[in-house]
Image 1 (cartoon, rainbow, N blue to C red):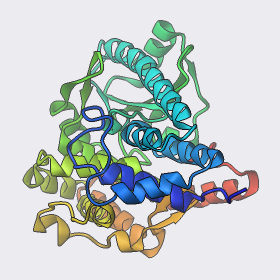
Image 2: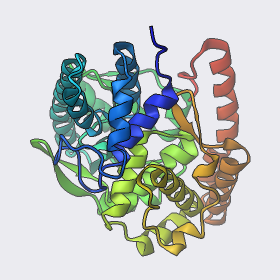
Image 3: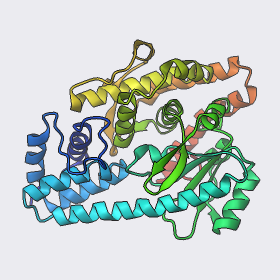
Image 4: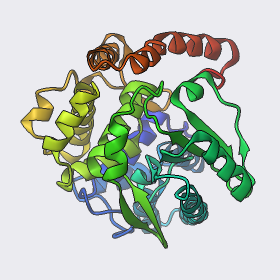
Length: 374
């Protein structure tokens, strides 16, 4: 029996399938497309060597990276051409994922409609992956926390997940809704790992726009706010990239929709510009590995980056960003800027992050999970 493909081999194939496609040409517009940047023959040769258990690993990794609908249609076409028995399995995986997303969207639309009665609401992160969808549904609301909790309980019979220390600092609430496999996560009036970012929330709300997703129209952030939120999540919280983050950002940059002259001063005021520039340059370097071209980033971005994709390594199924000293320096810049702004409460919140991270690491080592901390 051939050895099962490891995560590196599977991620390489998924990267070829997603980043080899012309950026801006979404998978739902051309579901049978096979990459046309020189990867076609190589992909076909790779898929020919895959056994049944390898496709299981590929599906698991594609699910973790939220890239099923942007890779599996092209994969399915290759499998059909090779008359592989697993082609039906691939088609079934696509069908199941579309059904999951359709169900999640119907709940998401209803929740947004209800929460909008108490304040502004914006869907953040989850819909950035469209036509894929995240594993939970993230919202931002500027309503009172008590109103958000009451609406979720009374309108949707939702129950509250136990809140971690990080959740309490970030003023974040997770809800379990009957009939919905995904958690609904609501960030209330704050952003950032410790809820230290409040100034950028005005831009998020004022510049949000309605977009069509399937049969639902939902409020989402403007491109610049999308970049800020993605950077906060990847560079200041999780310290790893998923393939969906890379594809999402590449498509956004290539679309020409980002106003960097607006983004830079907004990000600088929050102490996040160095992190944003580093995030964009890191994504650009990874994209070049598969498309042959860097993203069209302006000099004001590339000159501000502290490092790039050369320091990113695949470990434990994700593309890990170095924490010490690189990411720690980004954290220090954010902390210093908040202090300079006179945001003493937010500076104090962010000061708790190193201790929180240490506690989470210890908890993970002892129990295998940092759920109650992080």
